[in-house]
Every structure is written in C-alpha cells, then in structure tokens.
Length: 258
Image (cartoon, rainbow, N blue to C red):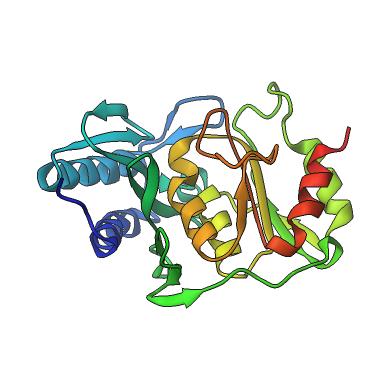
C-alpha cells in the first residue's frame, strides 16, 4: 500500500488553506445545514480539491469528510474538515483552519491542522512528537486547575441536546483561570498541544473535528480521552478531553460531578 507522509499532508493542508485565505473577506454563498450550522461555497471548494488530490495519489482510500460524508474504500482512511470554523469564516472572524488526518492499521497515523491566516502548521506523525511550523511543541506544565486557561465549544443544537455543555462551562469558569471559546475545535486542541491553553473539552463532535488535532495533542504530551475518561475518543459518540497531564484528573473530576 502506498502510504502518504506527513509532508504530503502538510502540502495538502497548505494548498487547501490558500483556498480559504483567498476567499476570506469576500461575499459568500451561505447555506444552512441546521439553524446555526453553516456551510459556504469555500467549504465545498476546499473539500473538492482535497478529495480530488487524494484520490489521484492514493486510490486505495476511503473518506470521512464533513461535507460529502463517507465515501470510497481501501486501506487508508482520511478524515477531512475542509474548513473548521465556518461560522467564524462567514462572519469575517479570522479563526479557522483546514484539518486532515490519515489512518491505517486501525489508528490515526498522521495529522495536519493548518491556520492560513497565521500561517501556522500543526502536525504530527504517531510516535514521533508534534510540530508547529516544523519545530517540536509541547503541552504546558500546568498542575493546578485554578491557574489554568481552558477552551471549549458548543454543539449546533445546544438549546435542545442534553448535556449541552452550558453546565460544564459554568463549572470550569468557576474552577479555572478562565474559559475561552474560539470557534474551531481543531485549533482548540492544537493550542493545547502548543502550550497556549492548558485544557480543552467538548461534546457532540464528529470524527473529522478531532482526528488530526487529537493526534497532535497526544504527540505533544497531552492526555487525550473522551470526556468520560475512555481512551478511544475516536469512537462514537465523539467527545474529547485534551489537557496537560497535570490537570487531567482535576478536569475529569469536574466533568464527572453530578
């Protein structure tokens, strides 16, 4: 089987990121997949580009992609979010990214998350550590939840689904130095990997949201599980807890409170 390399994923992410950057600040054709779940023509343009490139180079591939769903077959599984942070993008908020992961032998092996507005490439190959623009990056050394800066996100149906994360947000806001809400799950986890934020949790995610960033956070030394503490955060229903090892138990305990 012809396996891709980490540099292959980085090149794909950069090329897709150029599509996002070139379209940023323009008038967009916005469609609604849900009440507040948006998609633009740029999401589709980025995904179409990535699928075409990957199919041409690695035909033995199946895809789990945000806009086109599951397709293809083969020994490689690609998780693609062509524009993570679409609501930000549609409103001109420059916090969004491209996320690409590739799995084989039952595990995510490669991941790349590219922020085209800051020209920041977060990347990892399983077992070799995490990189930010080619340099090794590590999680923070935080050990006290009360001195930690956290980040989270909310599901698109937050007012109907339970749990909707509002209660967890309140708990962590009272227990930590602060909680941010950036609007891109992939960047949230990558910011933990880079030590900029100490911990990240989120519910009601999809595989393409966390496949690449979860691996990057793991390789940067983060403890990464589902929010119930189960190791396989790629198993549905998808949720994630990614944080500095020194605050993992404190975050998990906060999530487990009745």
